[in-house]
Length: 305
Image 1 (spheres, rainbow, N blue to C red):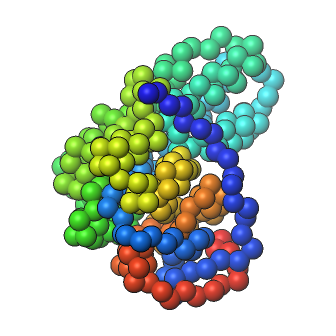
Image 2 (tube, rainbow, N blue to C red):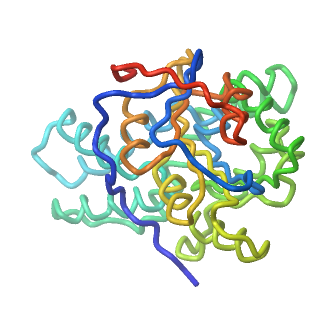
């Protein structure tokens, strides 16, 4: 059954104080309690594992500003950039087509004649590929190491989850054919196998919630056997709705400096993430805690900025 991806809705108020696992960057919003450890783990891709597409808003927003200017609006480029940047950010985590649907609405609101959202999506994709083709080719040729285009600690945590017998799944809002290509370029196909899912031409036929429902149905398990990782609100919300443990990955994609991106962090907390991390550098502590071995908690009475 087709499902639309819901818009962002804050369900947790901003925190005045935070809890961290002792000596780590792992922030505890609520301590997950499970009688049995997770058996299945769902990962988002871009920003959660892959950094190949880092900087994509710098491609999408200017393209949108150009389309909006063509309507003859009297708004300045700066005003349009601010407006487009806000709704692009607000819709981040959903399939790309939803951002293009919103663009069409904004064009028509200004009296313009909009093209189909799929046309704008293709235009954006072509421009993005101009930006990232060199990265993809560097990985393909071996002139760049996959680790340089992964969120730090990605390989280590995937290895550990596999060692513990966890079945891994990947679901992305990026078109499936490109997700599969980039999964292979980064050498992650050995972890996910055929369980790689992405956006379809018929966008209503795919959602991350549908992937989660399939995982639970095909394995005949309740949602509390599920562990989810993501830097967007959709996968966090979907995992929580299913009853799983949700780890928000507030990755700083451009700097990879071990500090969380403040905007991502607040957004992930707001949608109900159980834990928030900047990357997987403290993967061992994180896994031990989720599996019941991490009892040490240090109280820090100020938020990470």
